[in-house]
Length: 391
View: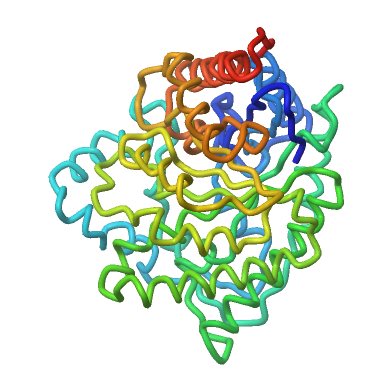
């Protein structure tokens, strides 16, 4: 991933607003998809984003369900595993009345109610049983993604663009193993299959972003009963599986994103980042994107005062949040960037968002936040360099 010693570069986590006829759809005609992706790429450039993507429009805006059509070996299950995990949370139990009302009003995942409802898919789409060998069969769909994004880039080089995919640990959730001898063999089979996608994205010259919300998000569902030591071991195995899948991908092309589920809820039982930061740094990625702006995790920036960032690594902290409809003031954004720059060096910091904005914010708010992000990065660059820098 490109560095700069002159300015703070800007990216985001992935999902962006899309036209209603495109968002959440998987059977969009090629021409219409190309038009929509072209518009989204152009809007990112106008907002001042340096590392752009296709807004996740090419995968229907869903970081999990797109894999349904790309992996063989699975059949729909009548189990309520994934659905029950969402509700089987200490946070969701402690604030049950809030969650009941938020689900009823459709604002749990997007406060204005303008985005397609999430978390309400049928069980047959959320839960799967592995009944045969897992293989990657999504080559045609993936190539469409790659071609559509690259065609929309214009004068932006592919090395400054990224496509998102999903970590094996997050794909494991909601998928029951009925074929492999052990859960670990099942996990590594998913990793081997997803390696095909990871390697193809990298071979196209693009950055690969691996999304992994469930690694931290499972803590208050399965981790609390296990205890932190056992849960750390659980996470370490999942990181080993991811590294196995990334074995043929150059580290400088890999971005790893972790969040805590990002729905608009209390998040009172989120796993502290301090408990797994050393495990995260074992991932064979150059760049780490994580929540650092919302009020549940902003204080965790202080971790980097005592945790040494390994040589060659880059932090892309969220400095604007999906969790509020208020648009952050650029001075606040600059201050947040400056905090990280003072701890790890400004050349090792890229300004990002906490999570995807496409399903979390009203479209106008999402684009406003990206503009504020770029303005704040320019202010931070000015302070660091002592001279004005264009966003």
